[in-house]
Structures are given as C-alpha cells and as structure tokens.
Image 1 (cartoon, rainbow, N blue to C red):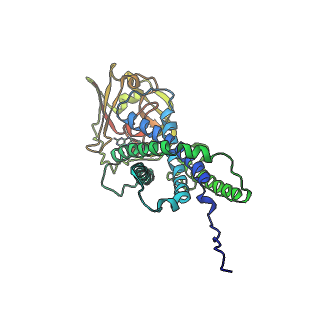
Image 2 (spheres, rainbow, N blue to C red):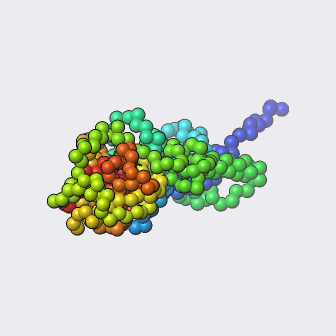
Image 3 (spheres, protein in one colour):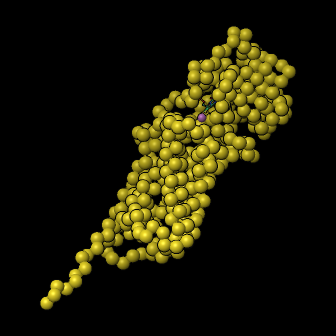
Length: 352
Ligand SMILES: Nc1nc2c(c(=O)[nH]1)N[C@H]1C(S)=C(S)[C@@H](COP(=O)(O)O)O[C@H]1N2
Ligand SMILES: [Mo]
C-alpha cells in the first residue's frame, strides 16, 4: 500500500489565536483611546483652548492618565504584534485593492504607534535624542496613529465580534488564557512600577518611576536657564513696581496646589505669596520671567485664572523662601495649569 498522505499536525502557538489578538486588541484600543484624548487635551491646554480653573487637579489627572495609558500600551502593543506576527509575513503581500489598503493602514498604525510610544517614553525620561520639536511631532503623528487605528477597527469589527465569543477546545483555551493573563500581568507591573511619578500612594513601589519621591522635582534649574537676579530687582505689575520686601509686606495667601508637568510627573506643594488679582487689574495677564530665551520663559494667564483667588505670585514653597531652582524671587502658581505654564523667576505682570 502506498503510504497514506498523512498531514503533519499543524502546530499553532496559542498566542497566535485570533481570539487572543481580538482581546489584546480591545485592551490596546482602550489604552490608545485614553492616551489620544488626554493627549489632545494636554496639547489644547498648552495652546489656549478654553480650560476651566476647577477642579484644581484636573490637568494633573488627565496628564496622569495620558502617561499611564501610554506606559500600559507598550506591553499591550508588543503582545498584540506577537499574536499576529505570522500574519504580517503572509503571502501574497497584497491580494487586491481593499487588502492593500488594509495592509497599508496596518503599516502606518504600527509605525506611528511605535513612534508615539518611544518618543513619549523618552520625553517622560526628559531625554531628547532627536532634532525635531517633540510636541509638534508627537501631536501630528498621534492623528496618523488614531486615523489608521479607526480604519483598522472598522475593518476588523466583524472578526472581533465573532472571535470574542467563548471558544470550545479546553486545552488551547487554557494556554490562550495563560497568554492573556501574562499580558495583563505585565501591563499591570508596567503601570505600578511607573505610575508613582504622578500617583502619590504608588510612590514607594514605583521602582522604575523616572522621578524620585519626596521633594518637589525641579524641571529646569536656575543655572540651566542662566538666571541672574539683579540686586535692584523689582516686580513690574502694570504701572506699579514692587521690591521683594514690599511683596512680602502685602497680604499673604497660602494654597495647596500641584505642579503637573507635561513630561508626566506631578506633585502637590504648599505655596505662599501674593494673589495675582491683588497686583493687576482685570484682563488676561502676560507673565514674563528673567529668563532671556527658552520656550517657557513667558506665558499668558487668561483672565479667569488671573482673577482666581488661588492664583499666586508665590514667594514661599512649603513654608520656606523659594530656592533659585524653584523660581526665586517669585513664581507663578495657578490651579489646574500644566507645569510648563507655571512660570518661574517672574519679573513682570502686564494686563493685555
Ligand atoms: N521661566 C521658566 N519657568 C518655568 C520653566 C522654564 O523652563 N522657565 N519650566 C516649567 C516647567 S516645564 C515645570 S514642570 C515647572 C516645574 O517647577 P519646579 O521646577 O519648581 O518644580 O516650572 C515651569 N516654569
Ligand atoms: Mo514641565
């Protein structure tokens, strides 16, 4: 008898099952969605979108969600790619026009996602090993990623629907579950070990947090910003001007407000100083610092913020005179504002 053509058993690793891909893909869709929306908000707030003064912690929360969902996306994206990689090399590369479009969108999606996650991570680590301007590039590529993602979801929704139903075979189901559990666990570990940069009660266990717990971090030091405070320094405020002693003699207010850095860390502190509303008339207020150049040397404080009773020209941090690195002789602190707009080394306030 001629040997029967016995088909060798095809081994399919459990992770490459479409049900796994669907599930990880759904999680990734959620973290990407959160990251995109909070990223848009962050960009908007820094570019004069209307933004409320309350709750005082809102920006801290949205930026925290941005960073945490970004960190969570890294293991999820890797798991997702792992679960589909045999398909990425399928032949023929292109079957027809819709297929070509679908593959093209996946290429854009993968490339844009990697770009966003890698640049975001480097940004949080305050490391800029590239020559483009981070906010513009990160913002523009986010649209590419989300556009490609929407196409991908539209194409895949029927498949996802079908495959999320409970599968039948016991053994492979178990190993698929194990893969999903590992993915979930890795994502959880990534979150817990880093989220302490912004979530106070995670500080002690966030061993990979890029900002140490305890004292308020310094983003740009006085030395890096070339700050020299002239001996005859006075704050210009509209038509008036004040020496530091005169500011100290005015009614002082103490507030507890966070610095929520766009680079991902945030921390509360106690600030004492003079209300901006006591120094200038109503209107948007241009805040200038002693810094000569540098992207964040000056900001505009919208009227609602300038008139807010919590908005201070702070002279003290946690009860002590400001150190040079935190903005001596005085710095702006306002509720619900990104750290980049909390100008240090202030030298003039001007109603626009
Ligand atoms: N003049 C000036 N103010 C500045 C900056 C700057 O570069 N120049 N950096 C800002 C950024 S990015 C942040 S997060 C906060 C940090 O304040 P801190 O260093 O006191 O914690 O200061 C802000 N104020
Ligand atoms: Mo910042």
